[in-house]
Length: 433
Image (cartoon, rainbow, N blue to C red; front, side, top):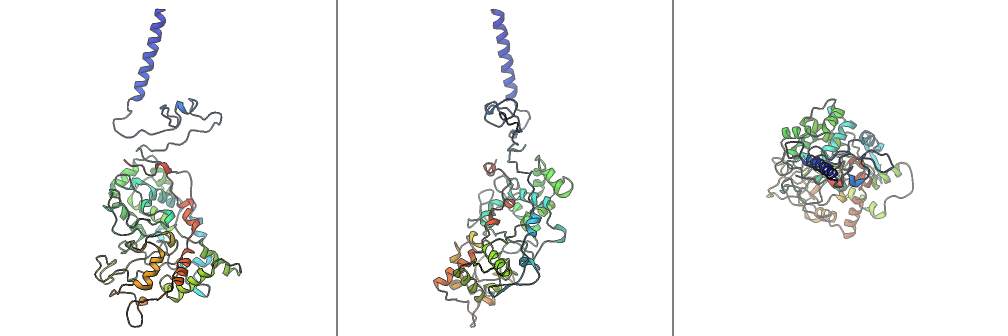
């Protein structure tokens, strides 16, 4: 009997020693452990004894273990297996959208976006590059403390703008202006970006928020190093550029490609245009919506939002600020001038204007109806015959019709298209240190 007790005691000591070995860190740093397929910590993680058979397989189905949900840095892993086809999506724009000739709808002529495309010759759309850009756009690693991504301030369901008046940065600070929507960013011939157009190109713009001390607070050299320490970016850069070198220039190229792919062309307005071009008598827009379109034309809104993408041809002074306002946009000889994005998906892009002070579309219509400031540089299109700011005298029915028309520019397919969605697991999207 005593020998059996000794044997059992030896077995118990051996088992305890094995448990102690498993609890010891395998590295000398404080990095969070990687949850790898087949790990068996007994804590409910995939592959643990609590989850089923000890061979790492689900009972009876023979499926492989799920992929790890965090990388070697403890931050979320993206979906790198899917390959969105941005080239086909952009090429799918209807002919009237991009043809050189103008398009007439409801007796109103719209110019095409063919001459407005700001894509440079050395950064044409390419699926692997745009795929990389999507992952970078949604990755919190681009901020100094892993708390915000570009998508934090540019949300797909809001036309890639922020529903907050001012966006919250990585350390809790707030931006000085409302985040611009990114819909149809490629269709602005001057090619400049931000409300004050301080970025000469979309490539330049894409890395500026990363370095901003309020927005993301990241040094580009440190970012290159940081991304190089992940398990997946090397392969993504190789697929996109031919080798695994991670540079800020390549980051800019990839992110700008992803943003230029954000073209919107499947709204109810587009359906109505296509129906008329096809001589389809089935009505698509209501009488109220068509009345709003007529007002959009007769009130000269179309003189600025002239293309089928409803993008302004250049920056404008729309009287949104007074002569004494501290924020004069572009400034200098263009004091009071601001860039304005596409009206596509405008109904989901509230609040409005550079400072986000208008909460809804009816407020925007009322501003143009009665609230335009008499700025020294006010656009001549917004002055009456006496030189004073226009007062349109719209009825309530007119204002409601204009809002109804603007709502026809909402592209639900674009706002939910998975090729523009978050590639990181939802439950991990807010991971921070």
